[in-house]
Length: 268
Image (cartoon, rainbow, N blue to C red; front, side, top):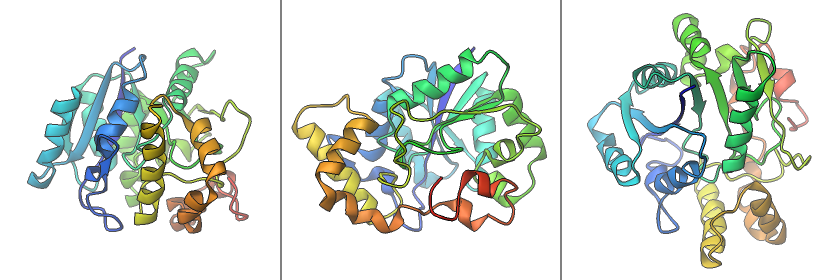
């Protein structure tokens, strides 16, 4: 089983342009994230997938520097970008990990992947998002190539093409789907946020990394981050007004299972 992870990134974020090129620790946001993914020994390849234009050539240098693959594809059709990258590398299992999760816990990646591999029944899709229990910033989705290919062929709605996987996970009657919860038993999905969309998010993420780098503790994960943020509420509160934000809300009318994955009380 050939297992690849795809990091989708771009320069043109309207909310925080060039966010993955911002400095973080000893490198940049994207480089820092790649190094975290490289802690997962089960992955066969890591791909940085970008829009196919001259503005993203600098990401090719990041791929070269970090010894991972580089794939330019569709700018707006993320489903096509993932499919073409997976097809080119002959992937059997594709892990989708967005670049706005630079502090994704390598253990969360391994949990989702091993759940996919060790399931007693054949599965199409496994994630830690439906429902979510990890702190926001640990998004991991794994899917089989056949499920991704079917979505690529049949998905029509713009949000299905943009977000890559909803055609699959919003049809549990059609696809075999599993969900992983945080092994701690905790649900911090709406308590902490270190996904990167806004300047306040960057301040939180930089504060986390500066702390662990200063103390030379680079093997930190979601639990260690949560303990640090609990001890430093002044940092955690910088982006608290975004804790319940999700693209799901915008597309609620089109998602058949919106209320299953996102409750109105703000809790997943």
